[in-house]
Length: 338
Image (cartoon, rainbow, N blue to C red; front, side):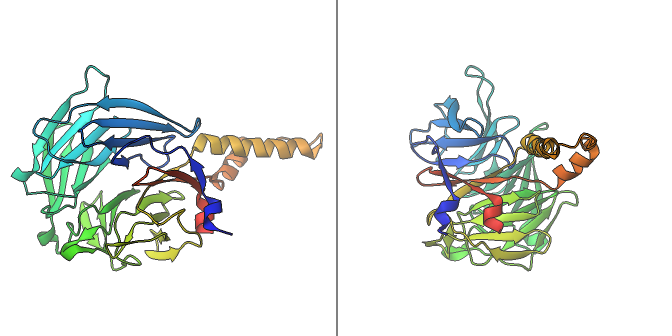
């Protein structure tokens, strides 16, 4: 069966230029942040239930003296956008309403270390972790409460390459941040995997390497953070591919999926799982089986037993977005891993 038959086409991202999908996994909505050459920033929200995009914010001005921005992180909970530019400036915009939205220049990162291109960020609770990018020789952390930036690690002190690449792909898996690939030194893609333990505040360069040096691939975690998917992207800088790789967090091993991406391209990806819908599905299934039994002395199963059954049921979907066109597909997780 052709791989395309597994992917359901959905409404594309309604952006005319550069966009990023910045939703957390397992949320009920997907957020897309876009920017254009006129420095207008727009925030869109996609409802999984209605299958429609809605623009929830439009901001016509970026911070004063702000260069070409890189959208790096978005906190879905607080609706805060984090931006970097090629000069090393760092700013955030907390979306409240049309009259109160104001940019806040957090800090000039050049005062700490010259970061020029490609830093990535991931928001954990009230802290924004800044990792990667040319010139960033370590791991920075911005605290939203204190509004201070702290240098957590310097790569030469750790004896690992935390700054291994521009645009590395970051993902949080339980109490760890995993960093995959990116555009490395010498105009080559990186195949390194680094692991940051949030609790112990320690980095580790894993012995396992990616199947091939890669960047611009979609990344998302599945099945309660047991696996990470790497979807499409580049292979050795210039060649894009349509492969989907399944990384086991526990075994630190890769497996190639039997299906391919809907096309050869660079992607963003996010996992959607509605736990309330899962519970309703299981309860409905058990109730139908109970009614079909037609046994007067057959009591409905106790609540704790149904909860045990729910623990074995999981329905997750991957939403996949082509970065260039904004095209949007959905695929069942179990079609990828089976």
